[in-house]
Length: 62
Image 1: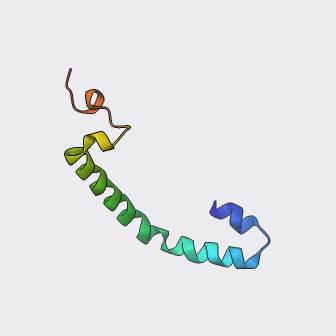
Image 2: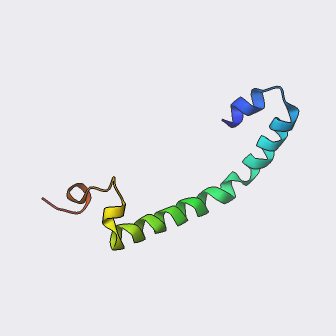
């Protein structure tokens, strides 16, 4: 997506995309950690809330 914005002709959009891309390496690990922790907590305490989780596929050893 960044390449599409950079290929565009609006210099303000290019500047904003470049500034945002600079901080992506800082944002992505924390986002993945928080999402993983939240999903793990939901699977333990409220597995019925996670609609796509399949007990037989991931937990049962049959």
